[in-house]
Length: 154
Image (cartoon, rainbow, N blue to C red):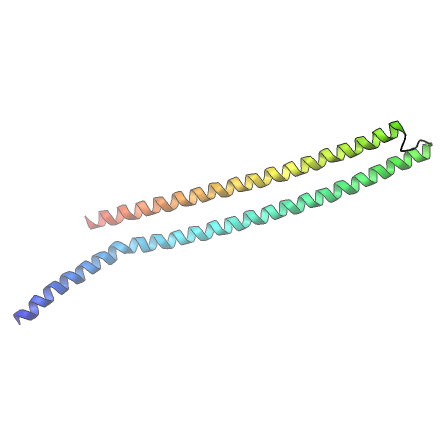
């Protein structure tokens, strides 16, 4: 009987130690699960940003198509007006007016491109900020979990 109790006592201590390790590791497992959720949230946010960028590009393409159509219509209208009044579109003042229409349209194109570029840069900055926030929250959760586990041990 004495040899059985000498074996049981160390096994009980090992069992107690395993229980302590398991209870110590439990908050870390929970924190890991919360970290996975935040990674998934960040992934969804990133997908939304990419979708918004594609919508911005589509909007830019539509604006460019509208700008070109408007320019063609304005140039045709101006040429028809000059033709009806007997002034050729190749004449000095007629050519200057048409050149002015083209330049004005080009400025609109540049503004559209700049607006889209700025919107995409803003989206990129928001994504970078969200990534940093996500990383900060993960680190805070790890520290909180570690401190909680350490305080439970003592």
